[in-house]
Length: 135
Image (tube, rainbow, N blue to C red; front, top):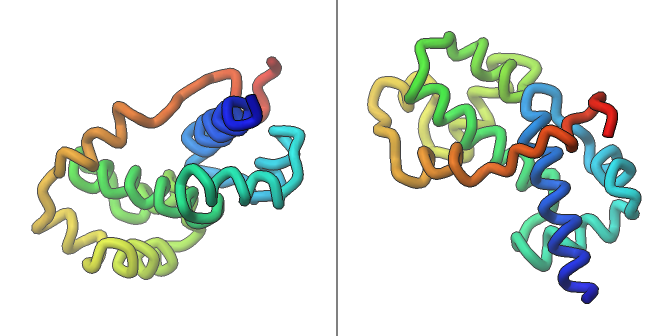
């Protein structure tokens, strides 16, 4: 029963994250929306995903940025902002650290991988979990 409840909380957290990529929520804000403690949220992510929620959220935003780089004509700066990075330099640094090449290099030499494209399909998009929308 507890595992099922934790799984539901994880799904709700993932939906909140996916629906708030442009303006990422802090871990404390996520926990508040889910009506749980930050520690409980961290335990849930550690159990099911093997990493802390903040790191998972950043990787989710970077995966989304990668898809946009490969599938759209938007500027790199616009993609970074759309994925919640406040500056182009911060976006570029995080992207290169995660993928091993710059956003510009990814756009020039990258290929849409099955994993990147599957990200778009698998991301939970539950409108009820968008911040600012009345339930």
